[in-house]
Length: 225
Picture 1 (cartoon, one colour):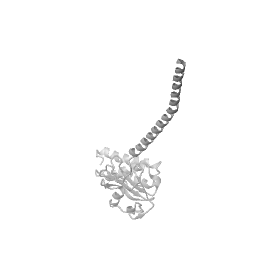
Picture 2 (cartoon, rainbow, N blue to C red; picture 1 turned 120 degrees about the vertical axis):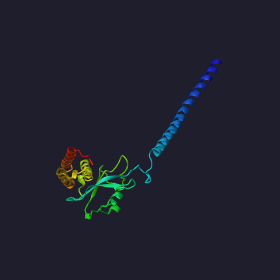
Picture 3 (spheres, rainbow, N blue to C red; picture 1 turned 45 degrees about the vertical axis):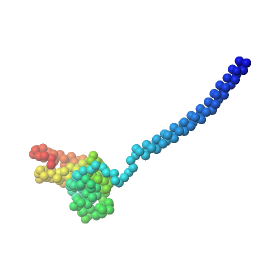
Picture 4 (cartoon, rainbow, N blue to C red; picture 1 turned 180 degrees about the vertical axis):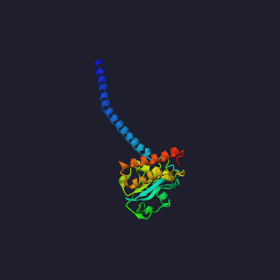
């Protein structure tokens, strides 16, 4: 009698274990599926919330300022490096249009002539960009050089640095421009804007130009501007 009772109890335990074995994977699979769906929802939600949608109304912090403008063909200088002022709300395109210099086609975004001289012009900024609609006054990402040329291979960091320095030189009011060494260096640099090999000659032009202006300033105790 006791043996029969134990057999029944044992049989009941075995049946319970069999039921658990069947149900546990099903519960586990359901839980895994729910977890996977939750993870997928989380990923999708993160993708939506972490990436701000692009909007033309998005504004970056800008301020008034100026950049150095220059323009050359393959054989001549059309605009010597000169400072161009802009307001914080202007784009490069708008600043050029109001600069007092003539840019044929500037309103369309494709410059076909400069100062009445037609040419196949390309444009580059100090950082290699060329977007006319860009605002030059964005703090921490300013446009400091806007250069037009017919030789697209002339862009380099060194070329942009030379144009920057030449524009600063032209804005000086301390008498540096009256001295022969500075004048000679500047004239050589002007030729370098359309003849210099970006890999070899530009650095030489920069060195000569900067050294001559700085040495004159140092000898005469002049400020840099």
